[in-house]
Length: 325
Image (cartoon, rainbow, N blue to C red; front, side, top):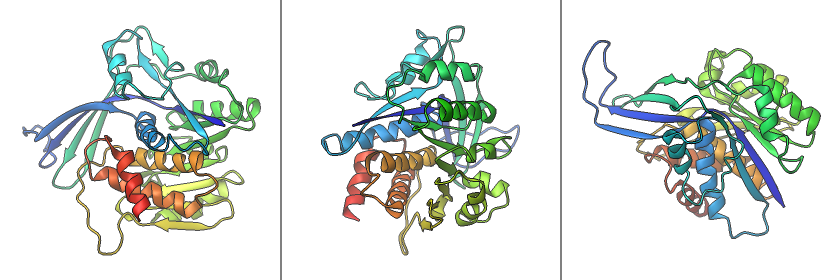
């Protein structure tokens, strides 16, 4: 059995400047390091997920997963487009044939991240000259996906368009599963997506903007707005995450066990890594991992992520540690 996973969201080239402290306005500061790497919620999630799938490739008893990325990219021949696709590796299982190429653009969406060593904060400045995906473009990109029981994951970037896409899926592919991220504070229309999704991911920043004081508080408050039978997840940084199952049971898992200390090196993409862990649990361990196990794996995976730069080798490391726990 093969399950198609279609991830829909923006793709960026991230320029990450590490600085000793966040600079004052109109000041000068020397960075301690500079990295340029591909970013974006869905691309990051797929990079981690492909590692996890590769580690379990020999297990023929579990469902195969065929991942797709649906995102807007510069023209097919642009150097930036080649760099983005190459960033997944030569043996990537990710299918890019459903991407939407903007032939009039040569530059990708870009994100500039200032990372403070003093506080661990991340300050992001984005620039995106690529036209956003339209509903019609989504339909054209996905209508011929094999299998009506595919899984569609949405970043929740443009809520009005995302809502149209999900409602179209409910009409045309009623067996499909839908997950969505509720992440950015102040983005109008995000809560309307909650009632349409089978799995919902809430960020701490969004939850706090709604005056929730913990992950559990957020899930309790949002449960009445969720689709019947939905699974809800909320991450809470160093405090871990919580999940709410269709039966209403809420479980939590801490990022660190009592007495444990970790050295945080890179939090960029930690939330995307958590999403990868949960999707991996549903797609590959739906029946042998209960809600607590899925949650604990995703938290452990994200905790591994923040202790290293980037994503290289993360899947092997996390699965090995999880097996030993």
